[in-house]
Length: 440
Image (cartoon, rainbow, N blue to C red; front, side):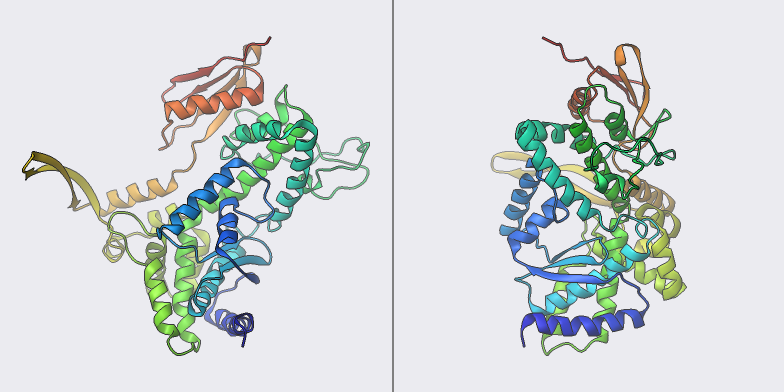
């Protein structure tokens, strides 16, 4: 029997067991790909993605790390409908089966989690259409020009938000076929969509610049809109990383024993599971942490209620609402402080550093961990457009800190997109400024 036929038969039995177990995943298309393909997909994040140098950088870094044995990519799964899962062709058959069961856990969240279930399930088609347009822009305006606008747009891709007033309004019919249907959706021939008007302040920095910059050409606005949509697509996924990997690990751990594996496969499954779901003494392993948290919720509330909790919470919310003293011990959550010492050598004393475990109050630990998980990209608001068109920004108070060097470089990118000076006030009202570029 071929590998493809064996895995297809296994998937049929796995799907039946998943439904009987109590999960409801979106259908999944599985594809087996070589290592270089899965590295490329992981670097780009989605098939059909437009090109940019940072994705080549990420591919090379990942390949170097994997070639040195510093990790292994068993799979990659995309939130589409049906979901698309890519399996590494060098995996053993037993590892492929574990990964398939693991993916169904991801697919359960794609379909049912509060933050994910209504997301754009065909966004990869938007990116594919954008790639074709970007290639056309490179032919018309030059590859360097497209690369430059992407450099600047990607620097603020995380500074996006959906505005309440973002609604379609009919205007005059377009004079030519609209090439941006993947951005604005299907439209009637007699109407096209108008960008929303912003009320300030707004956290949609990239969107505000795309719609209101006085210097951008139409094709540049299109590039910014695509980058913005991608930022909005990924924003909720950053909030549920532990939930994703923990639930997928929980599912494969409970589904595989319900299925009859070939002789010897159970040992290989246990080995792979141990590789990914092992506690790390110095950092949080999301596979281990999420899996054990899920187990504890099922033990306390039963499977149905535990799954409801899982589909409603974020990583930070899960910790803040359900981490207690028993789970702290179960999850081996320790806080350390570094203590300096010294060791004597023939060349004299040398400094050493030791990590010393500290007893922690559960409330303090819960708050610290929840706050750490809640921290995302800094929220930068557009406050006003001042004298001489200066764009006035504000960093809203949160636990994120602005790095002065990176802040200055990012403001220069914003200045180039906006076409005038920019001033940013941090949470302590300290200003960062960049002046407009001199002309001539």
